[in-house]
Length: 155
Picture 1: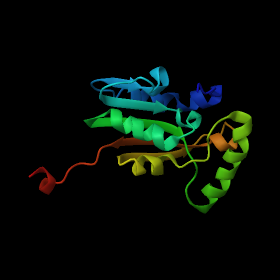
Picture 2: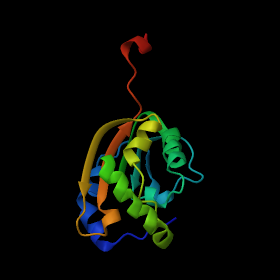
Picture 3: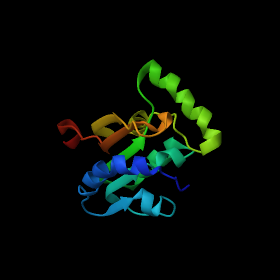
Picture 4: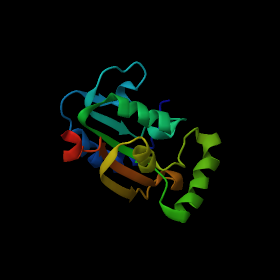
């Protein structure tokens, strides 16, 4: 599903997005440009920029990205997420209320889903974008990879 992004949201994320794109190494997959359907092989760098709100099954989406990651690869997410804690869960109800009108899933914890998929989060930055509607304000920038194997596992 193509997501219509408000201009003020695109402008607010432009610097972060550019900085992440500069980190690309090896074989690169930008999910927003080509999608996941029919994608084959393994990638050294995978990007997901404001793509999760259009995914009905977030677990399947993140698991598919995990399947496409090469062993020493990095995946970068720049996505709306819910706030943490009880207040976040309560405010997540706003995302559920908006879903019938917008078709977007804005009431999910993206970092938690990434961890459940078996990926290790190396960097996590939570921030808000004040210039957009409340359900789109909380964002997360996540860098994730496969967990590093311990020395005992390597022997």
